[in-house]
Picture 1: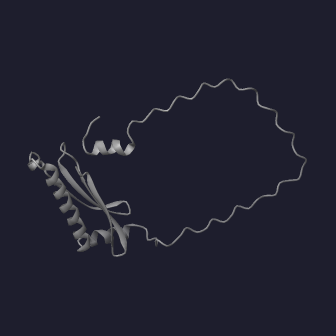
Picture 2: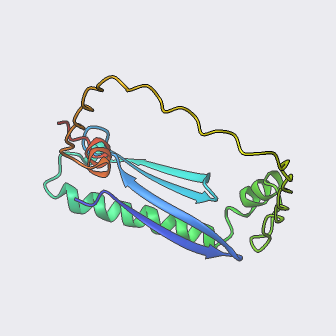
Picture 3: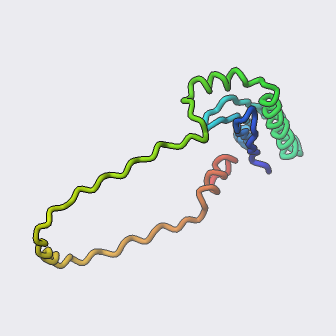
Length: 156
């Protein structure tokens, strides 16, 4: 079963990210999001609850996902989100991608007085025996696997 699609697309000199995901049988919804710089500019949701009992559900859902994903891309290419992008660009601070932060000047060093060196510090008192550190818990699944199983609705 396909869980989702992700594509970066350059439009008018800026990179946009399109992400489509299936919420799974427990919440039969396909969600497509259009991102720019971590901000969601547009979303589309399609429920497939009405066809959840078809025999070839996985193939049907995959086709629905592809079409919705491509539709969002076509809408971006056709300029349907230009107004949203313009509003976002006006709200976002204008920093050219090639501009770098100004260099930080070095901190001046202050000369130390030339007095005779201080005697070495006394050794610390012997420390009490420290208990051994607890063993780290073993991880059966990676974080990605846990998130993926949550997103597709598998309970462990």
